[in-house]
Length: 304
Image (cartoon, rainbow, N blue to C red; front, side, top):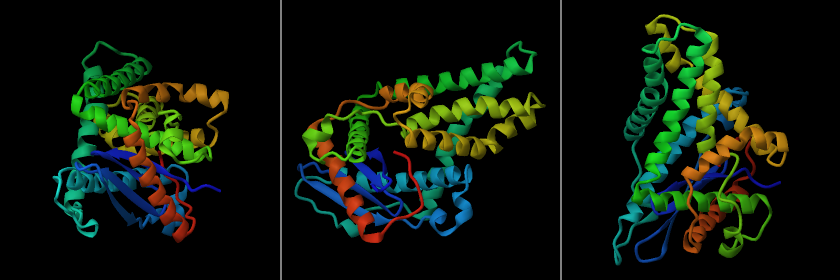
């Protein structure tokens, strides 16, 4: 059985992770590859209750954010090194616990304000008196904000290479899951879309929120705003279960139809990579697979 592998694009490189390891490969300015591999001490692997449905999604999201911040920090270190300079892989700059906590708060706070609280506030000022209509309109505004946000950042030139590495990550995982030979030319032929992508996860968070918030109704402002914040872990956990189910049944036509909007949304966050970029993603994948083979299987699952 193949290892469960996910990943993330970073600055001039790719981070790949398995249940027990994450690895970053970065293309240095001199053309060489910088590689860093770190073990993962997953709470879900140690505590069975953290692998329960919905709970496991919240745990996976938190761990993915922490690892993502660490990988970005490492990639920034290597991407900034000039030709002739060296950096010790064991001393590659990583965020401290305090820095990770600060980045986590900023990221979650931004997401809550823009995609949770703001739609509720805007809808509250509209002349809507029916609770069902209120929830649907709020959800439509929330999804629109996400699509507009992704469309706008996709226009930033400096992010194009990040989106190319995002596609390279997907191609490598698709090829690996298909049992193909991991060469740049072979991997390049695979799709840059993956059903377990975090972009699709974000869309499902927005959609599922409509149904969850419908249960809350339209209470007074303090409860309305508070519910959008407090219920986020539940919504994220449910969205994770949807993505997880889709990842286990990727060829089912009904599942593909349900996941189609999330797959389409990935067109905004992926760009066709070069062979050099695919080579980077393959190296990160090989490193994490080698480490996984050495450490043994784990019950934890990850998103692509």
